[in-house]
Length: 114
Length: 112
Image 1 (cartoon, rainbow over the protein chains, first blue to last red):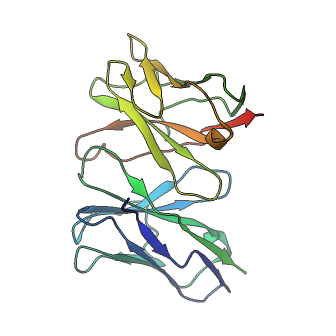
Image 2: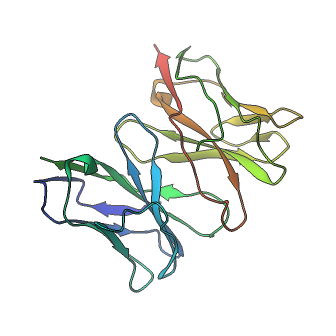
């Protein structure tokens, strides 16, 4: 069964360093999402892509976070510089359709900022 | 802001039906009710969704009240592997209203 791939699974970094997370969605899925999940809370959407275009990045802290999906397939989420409050699980999801249906989630990258 | 209210936690005996309630009193006519679950250290997993009619699939049943202000997710024969956080989400299918707002969910513990 096709799955969303994410790497790394775990990342430990010091504050003020740069970190990057990678996501490969299910083949054929045009819509890709990045979520952040703080311990004890539900996931919160950071950014949504349709192919290579950003559809919604209203919740992305743009002073330090950036996301790209240059060829409309895999995607990278970057944080520079990392802050202590960025410690969280970063989840990637993909879906066939932009507006409806099931989102398939990857296993996530757990980030710890020291 | 989350548009749903769920109990923080529930227990269920293994083999029994697990009934997870959700209140969504402000749901609009074109919004769907979605359920996802998240097993520890994994990404969320889609379970089921519906608009007005009750729905059933291989994982669960979704019962939506006639006024659509509440719903219940039913796992007919809970197993230990069903222990997870269950999220009830109200979601539109139109531009600008199709995002998933997860809230804090219900932590279901299936007891042997």
